[in-house]
Amino acid sequence: MAPTPSITIDHLSVNYRDVQALRNVNLTVRPGKLVGVFGPNGAGKSTLVKAMLGLMPLVTGRVTYGDDLLAHQLNRVAYVPQRSQIDWTFPATVWDVVMMGRVQKTGWLHRFSVASRQIAKEALDRVGMAEFRDRPIGALSGGQQQRVFLARALAQEADIFCFDEPFVGVDQKTEAVIFQIFRELAAAGHIVLVINHDLGESITNFDQLILLNKELIAAGPRDWVLTRDNMTRAYGGHVGFFGHVA
Amino acid sequence: MSPDLAVLNGLVEPLQYAFMQRSLAVALMVGIICSVVGSYLMVQRLALLGDAISHSVLPGLAIAFLLGVNIFIGAFIAGVISTVIIGWIHTRSPIKEDAAMGIVFSAFFALGITLITTIQKDNKIDLNHFLFGNILGVTAGEVRDTAIIAALVLLTVALLYKELLFYSFDPLGAQASGLPTGLLNAGLMVLIALTVVASMKVVGVILVLSLLIAPGATAYLLVPRLHQVMLLGAGVGVFSSVSGMYLSYYLNLPSGPAIVMVVSTLFALAFLFSPRYGVLMGPGRGRAWQKLQAILRPKDGVS
Image (cartoon, rainbow over all chains, first blue to last red; front, side):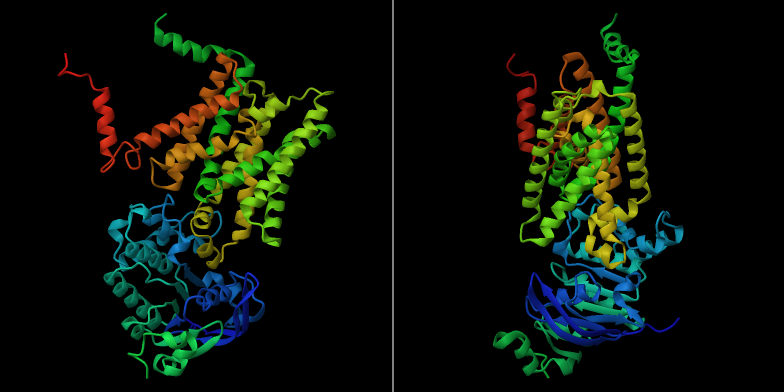
């Protein structure tokens, strides 16, 4: 199998309701690393990922993956939106949600194959949610819901994984399970991009960081990004985080 | 004759008339497709859009009638145009979507009422039949058109079920996986417009929203998965439209209100007695139910 190429973001600017949300971002996201996207509220973290995937219009710039635009290769992407974007009262079971990860691979007018069901089953096993298969998604805890979405992403068999705030409303056990799987995905040579805002201990799980505040502040290896100067530029003078700063 | 037989006879006897057979056929088909398509409206919180499309079909219907074209086609085109204009206002101005709907559907509705009122002076067309339904007056041609629409709608939903489920549950996730969500959304709008058009003669455009939303909402209180909501909803929809047809026949009511009263009653029952969500059922909700039981129970201590 050919190695996964990098994502190249070139002069990316994005507006959100006529207000500039991101200005002139240049960035390369490499496979094989667990990459965290950090920045204060309204820094444009979600916007960066959505714009990368072509889910919102760009003002300038292009995002390529290998030889083509990333927006043309979304069949290689698994994206998990923020919890708040989802209607948890929707009439669907855990199994229904995980099988959504197989829709794109199955193709129009085809039924899910036995192989697809097997892949979905293994994904549910991997996140430790197999016994909840027939539960309505609304009957799960926040952590369980997030694990089901992780299983859906795994079932997509993607090369690029993007997660928007996967640790919001999640218990300790789930956080450990999710980080473990993120590391495994990165180790398997995938691109793993995780939006986060928690500057606590969990930041040490990331190999690389992208620090944003309406523009790119810094990107690269964790200790290289986490300088006092970068953090002040991203968060202003009021950040209660210095424990891991190099 | 025993009472049971009398009831059975009351149901079967009217069916010897050809017009009742046509009504029954249309009631069955419309009961099914309204519930299936309406389930998408409900889970996507687009109930108001169903109302907007249904009110917007009137001018198209009137213009088609004047031009001598099939009124279903005119109504369908007007319904689709209204959704396009709503989307256009919503994206090209700071006006919110619900406000855009309110403006567009009332404008279309007013135009439709004006046109039909004007032409019904010289023509055999009755505004009330489109507003409140006239299931006993469907023609053979309308049965045929309804059958074509029903087949089209059910086939589309069956073939695109997994894509529409993903899209309606998580539009961003679906788009990010490469599904053409713009097309899926447009397809859904077309399905809604087709369903509204097929239902005009049965419930009328003012009350069609009830037959779109209430069966799915009733089923939603009882079963946990979307396809189950659709199937059970279809049962609720068919029961309502068929019983509404008989009420219309025996009590000389407009069929729309008759059907809507039945389906609303079924929803009220599910709302009160659903094992999972019923107001009078389940843990923590028991007190009201016990009180009600205490009131209804024969008072053995008193006698």
